[in-house]
Image (tube, rainbow, N blue to C red; front, side, top):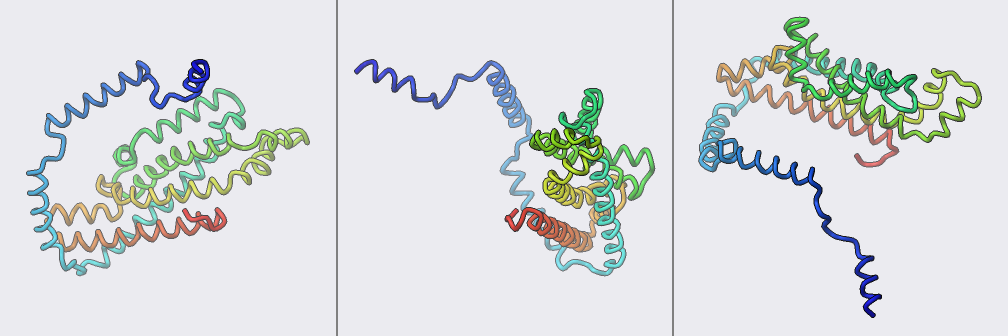
Length: 274
């Protein structure tokens, strides 16, 4: 009886394992940051919430009804923002394809290409797009060109990582079969790798496009062109009714991007809701 009970106890998995030293260190660091943030005034305070709600009420009074007297230049700037998002995403996706091929273990021609490509992906994804915008404003000057380049680099890092992971998930037999019949490296990519990964590539690109639509607005705030400049000017000059028109225009564009992207992903995935 005792042996049976001991066997049952031994067969029951532990619900909570003993945390490792690294886990304890991480928990202590996170807890310390939370405590420091709360005591140093980083946390949201009830009094600031109350005063903030009152100020938001004043903003709403000034913003409603929206001012459409400058609708034409606003729509022109909005068109620039849309073009920035589309062009930046297109360039980023195109650049991410060779980067992903070199960054995937099963398609990279040499370990040095793998290491460099992974480093490029890491740097592109680690630095925020707003910082890329500032860098390219310094490099090429104010205007949409800096925004396009910033979005392209950000998309290259985002898509490059997920494209590479999609390539690495391919069944090894697909690539080995093409090599066995004498296919070249380019033929393996075009005839085996890219067709197998196409649904994943499309869905990832659509997610990148949605993100770019939002990023293109923020990039305008640092001088990278588009509707962000109009919004920053209206807010600085306290023209809240004009700012409301700009915000509503941005909302319509972002929602349109998301709906089109969702429809394309749904079609690619065969009607699966995404």
